Structure formats: C-alpha cells, structure tokens
Image (cartoon, rainbow, N blue to C red):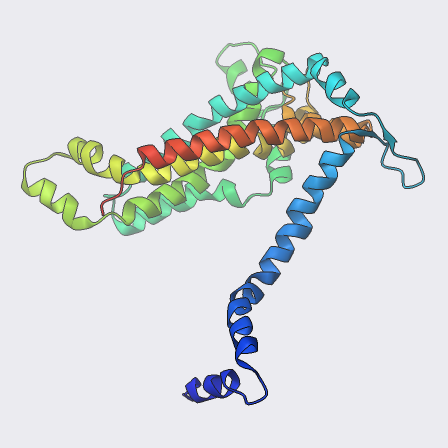
Length: 315
C-alpha cells in the first residue's frame, strides 16, 4: 500500500500556497466534506419548510397561473375554527396510544422470550415476524381489505361459523380506527422486534452469567439486567412511535377508509393531504402543517429530555 503522507505534506507545503492560505484551507476542509450533506438538508428539508411557512399566510390552489393572495393569519383562524381539525387531533392521539403496545410491548416480549431458543428456531420465528415489514403498504392494505370484508372475509366467515354476526371492521365508526391501528401495528411489529432483538443480543453476556451464578432467575434477570440495559432502545422506539406512528398509518387510511366513516379514521396527516391535494387548499394545508410541526416539535423536545433522563447504560 502506498504511503500517502509525503503526498499530503507536498500538497500542504506547496511553495505557491502562502501560510494564511494553508490555514484557511485547513479550517475550511471539514466543511467542504460536510457541504453535500448540508446542501441536501437545505434543499430537501429547510427550503420546503420555509416555503410551507410562507404559504400558510397565502391563498393558492396549486395552479402555476393562479395568483398567490396574501391573507395573513386568516388560514390559521379558519383551521382552528374547523371541527375536523380537533377530530383529527383526537384521532391522532388514539393512533399513538393504540400503536405503543403493538410497537413496543409485544416486540419486547418476543425479543426477550426468543433469546434463549436455539439459533435456528430463533431466526425462524424472527423471520416470520419480520415478513409483514417487507410487504408494500398498499399491497398489505389490499390484502386486509379482502380479509376484513363483511360478507366474504375470512374473519367474518369465522365469526359466522361460530354463530356471531359479521362485524363491519372498516364501516363502523367505533371499530374502524382501531382496525387501522391494528393493521399499522401489525406492520411495525417486525421492525421493532428486529431492533429490540439486536439490542438484547448486544447485552454483555458476563452480566447475565454473573447474575445466574448469584442465583437470579429468568424473571429477575429480565427485570434487573435486560430491561434497564434495553431502556435506550425502548425509549428510542417510543419516540419514533410518538413522532411517526400516525404518519405510518397514512397508506392504510387512504386505501381502506379514505378517512371515514364520518371522519373517524382521519388523523392530522391525512387531513393535511385532504387540504393540499383533495381540495387544493394549499394555504390551509400549509397552516395545518406549521401547527403540526410546532406541536410535534414540543413533543419531540419533551421526549428527548425524558430519554436522556431515563436511559441506562452499562458503562
């Protein structure tokens, strides 16, 4: 392998480069490496965010030939006076509360209780659990639409065989939202199980062996060793579920219920889509997006603070 040190010295100490130029080059070189990532952030994140903030004060219908009319805070006043906004916010919290057991508690139990299985059986179980994660959301929604059909779906046929009346999983306002929550959680179980299983496998085996030598049983090892050391991963998944859980359900809402019945499955993300693309009310959509950004920003700050306080590390 060629030694590049003389080449670096030659470039750094070229006769044509003055001492201030060399110092400036050394100071700017790290930022040159970061420039592509910074450019991507500016182009794909901060520029759309700034555009949405400006559009929230304007009235526009997405047509390039139509003018953008400055309306000030009127979009925000209209949004806050809209009953659909408060219904969507309530539904968003129902999504988050319903997803936490499916994305945290159940995957944690699977990760813990499959750890001691033989390697072949453990990998088989985890592979079967991870399969829903690789199914495209639209395909999964289409399959669930067939499974939950009130007349010919497998679930309702089983209920009729047992003598029960069929259930309108996607048409009953009281049941539809929990059906979407279950389908979204079913899709996320594999991802959370994979993350928690990797974190559980990374726990120092000497700690578990020392506890066993001291007479600790399986439940005590889980309570006193595994759960505390898994706390950073658990809190990370909690944070992801809170910040992204309702967003992950968008495809299933759009394919299965279109926000109905009676708006019972519409969350804040689907409401943004309805404003922006169904009714072309870009100003309303941008105003709702700014409200969502500020609200979830506060939630994210609180979750980060909680994560820093409650996480436990073995070092």
